[in-house]
Image 1 (cartoon, rainbow, N blue to C red):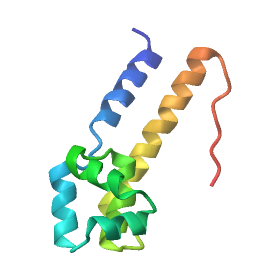
Image 2 (image 1 turned 60 degrees about the vertical axis):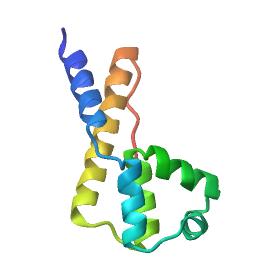
Image 3 (image 1 turned 90 degrees about the vertical axis):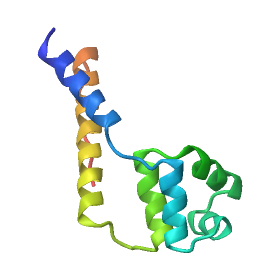
Image 4 (image 1 turned 90 degrees about the horizontal axis):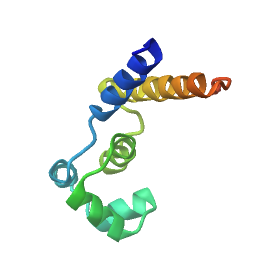
Length: 112
C-alpha cells in the first residue's frame, strides 16, 4: 500500500469520527435554549419539516455547527468548535490533494 492510499484511508477514517449531533442531543440543545421548532426554522431559513427530521435523525458535523449557532444565538464559535471545524477543513483539503494526486491533476487552491 502506498503512502497516498494510507493518507486517504486515515483522512476518511478521521472524517467519520468528527462529531455531529444525534437527534437526542439536538432536542436537548433546543430545550436547554428554549428554542422552538418554528423559531429555529425561522432563524436557519429552513422549513419546519427539516427541523423535525433533524430532531429525529440527527445531523452531520458541518450542519451541526450552523444549527448550534442558530439555536444558541452565538455569533462566534467557541474554541472547541473552531478547532473541530479547522480539523474538518484540513481533512477535506487532504482528501482533495489525494484525489488530485491519484488523477494526476493539480490540487485545488482555496483562498479566503
